Length: 341
Image (cartoon, rainbow, N blue to C red):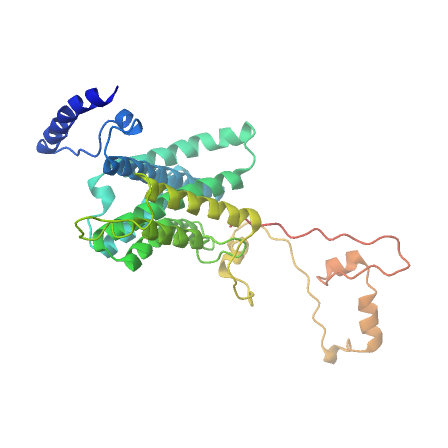
């Protein structure tokens, strides 16, 4: 019953889009209601999904950057700068490499969204925590994962559309998704999560999501008369399926501690020395340095050190031993604090 009205309205919609184009406007897609009911073309639905993904990535990346900066006790200006760089940093690197005009210079809406979200999160986040939102780490992880998945798909699309090469498209997707996060971590004096994913993989979901996007797109971005896809998919699915795959894989990584193999740490990292660089008074650390010249290398002296109690061993910085068999119970040493990647 809707076929006849839709055919009658199609020339009007085409004329309206042509009028917008002639006046310098951008006719991105038809009305959203017609797109949801199937009255719009497949390319319009794909563009609608891509635009929504683009804006979602900007907002979520800005939120993640602001939470990280606020946790490092930055003020409003610092949180706004870090949140904005997290949102637009990866796309800026991508556009410079591809020789394109930086996207937020022509479309300032992304810069506006990044600034607005940064200020809003800075002002409302303490109130949300006081109302009961205690799991700030989980909120940061989800916002960061949403921003990373969205940036990955948008960056891969732009790289593939610009060059038509799968390798360049995957590289653009990865750079767009992790570039802003690396800037955020460096400004906050933290180890970049994308490069030091000790507990859960971070950049790998973006890499696999970009690869899946290239596989589902087929030769869509080549100069072919009839582009084909290896898998018949509805309009917009080549953007949504890799986005969902990247998001779920990142969530599974921090939930089940999925990580790539890495070398064991041999020495202390510079990022672990942040506390020693502060002006706050530090607790003194006692160390026992005994040399044979001081007469502390005898067997009786070694046995005496082994028989020190837990308080004495903790005072002199010696490792805790198991309680001898004659004593009651064993001293429980608390596990080290867990870290979120």
